[in-house]
Length: 546
Image (cartoon, rainbow, N blue to C red; front, side, top):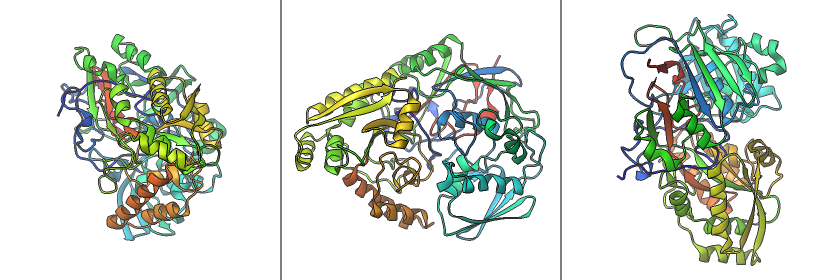
């Protein structure tokens, strides 16, 4: 194993513009201080828990400032599909389930789950929990929240609940959900997104303001007290929070958390170095990590990640409506050079949307891990083209993102692929991906505990199918995989799906980044989880040493 080196990419966090997603895989390794091992060694990815051991007994009170790559967008789970809104939601709103320190789905608001039949879930809720407006968090509230996603035409999570046939509430603490058919990743979908439980009274009272205001809506560790767009989000301790620490004392420990957005990763890191911020969400520039690990004022911890960076191609328009052109693009990219030059040998090269951290579903020895100029030219020739011109849209917020784009542009030019880089606001890139107003674009995916995450990216009509791919064979494989609880059958379906993707290549996966938590030494039990955004609910255990 080699010692830690340096650097990152696309979004101002570890991913190519970091967008949306869910959770993280079943893993066993623990987070470790930077400098002890490299993320490129091939070990299984680790999840959540505190980034560093706590120094002494927790101190109650105090305030911290966290620098994050971008501001939140919306606090309504119906619309929320960005990572930074999820950070706030996780501090203010509880979910039915969560991910434990080993990457397993466990109950949060749900105390016990029974499956009398493969398509039936009987959830026993924890008793006595109240929303911040004083109303009860009960079975009817759960039904209300799930039905919002089932009935709202604009819910970005509707696909996660579309198989619900009925929701019964036999008593105040019991929810019985019957699905139309077995859906293997069902509970994992309720660790975020449709799993966020808001006060029905608050939702109805806030109306459209729910996008900007969570007053009374959550049952989480903190209350949202102010949001100055693009300036700061302020959260204060929820005095009625239901969780206790190991000694029976109330959580959270902190009185206040302030979140500030700094799109440039260098500016974000500078704020932590100077003490203007206590911690940062998103990886620091990898070029700086070795030096950061030596800084006596900072703590840097590494956890292997489960997300990945990718390039979408619009399969509905020229030039990428031809699969051969898409394959030529993928063959022409030198993933190893990107990892070495931009990411300083951190992370792993990747060519499939099912990473190694989900070993039972991952296809090893993929088709595009090594650059192959001859095959790229052959594919382009088979498409009847000697050269292709196209535009590539990426966020303008990160210097490292621009470095990736420039490197890819240089790599593919050799085979006749001429790329014009368009630097746009991240929100514009994401909107263009959804509408199809692009030829190719760079984005990131934060990962999921279950390989079913690729359904959102690749199924016909799915919410984040930016490539607009529509392949009946692929749809069948993805639906078969989610309709059976048997892992062996799911393995076969996902591996066949990946082999089909190697031929279709509607999107190019090329990098799997690790996660780094960077904090001031005074910050204790800061969560460093598998995707760096919403996997852990351990924000309630953070504290500040005086």
